[in-house]
Image (cartoon, rainbow, N blue to C red):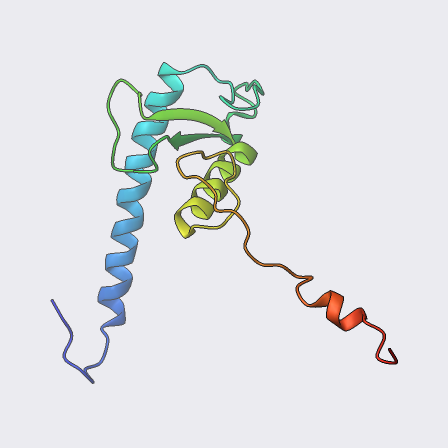
Length: 131
């Protein structure tokens, strides 16, 4: 439901909606995280660090296609990653989505050659003005 322009925001209702969204997200995460930890070994799929029940809270579940709603029961869209590798995966993806020039290991696009010449006109600037 849209709020009329100039109407007061119902902050209690907003707090309720945000809290419910967080509870739903936490519930979804618990479900697929538990499944992934049952299916996959307790090892970071990138760096190979092994986990025990003592430090298992540091092992995260990464969605390979970056779609947190794509949770097939066979775990094919998940991989267990340590906190550092998980952060790196999302950093790589955000750079890719933004179109930054660094490929960060993603090879879907060909990089464009540089066209800027920072030394253009330097020869003229270095000419002796007395000659």
